[in-house]
Image (cartoon, rainbow, N blue to C red; front, side):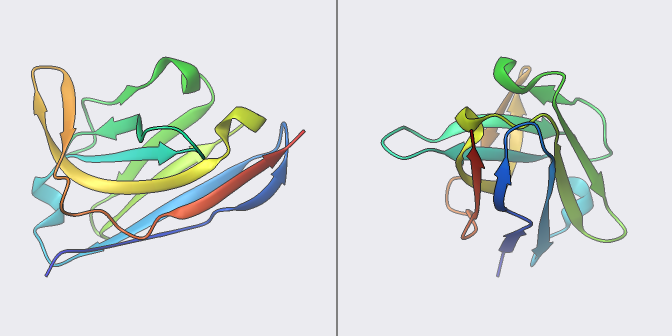
Length: 123
């Protein structure tokens, strides 16, 4: 079965950095685009970043452009999210997922969410 395990979250002060990892299994990882979403308390789940199967077609939501970097290592079957210059507004549970592109828009396979990893940024 498909399994997605996020890690790397924690409590950090504003301006600091974290790197999230998502270890995947149960599918042919190297053939699927991957993405990161986040959900803050009281808010809907929000798209953060996506990356194509071979590392191209990278896209970010406007609020993280210039601060976050998505990458993947298909040999390690892992996708990463490097988060720099963190802000309190980045506080959320972060999820990774496989998905696909409709035009330039990344769409998740909504039944394949992991447990998420909590990121808390203090001011």
